[in-house]
Image (cartoon, rainbow, N blue to C red):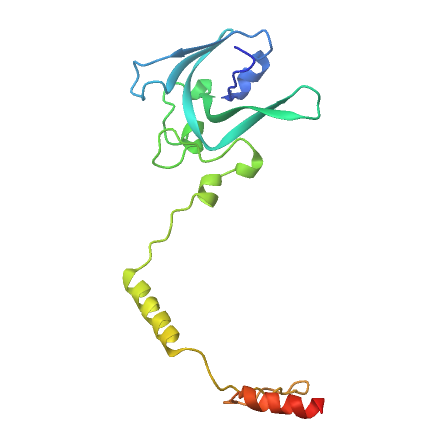
Length: 193
């Protein structure tokens, strides 16, 4: 594989001890299955054999490279991963309680519900929630209410009074006041003179 080509490969735990830089990994497309073309593969790693699925990640992963350990530059975007099915699930990988079915979004064949980092665990249920559909009748009621408020305009005469309450004392019930800016200006003039 060219060093500039990037691949996310999710392997079963028992395959980890077989992986080393000298391992020979063969990925052979299998278009004879019931799966979509280009999504199902026969995978061989040294003596191990299994099947794999090309799955879509919920978000794009950027890969970066550095030459001087200071400056980084982007080398690629990865939006898919190749998932290798464990040996014991190889006969029926799409069964109900398999690791593949737990990874996927319900009702989807190839979309993974979690990203590759802990912060993106179950990200599809947290960030890609479906929008709540508004009831058209309620929306029209709110629109009418807002129009009524806008047509009435703002209050012209309002009088303000500051009430200091003692500790434990409540505001008197039905306490209403009116505000008149002219009387406030007169009071301010009296204070200035």
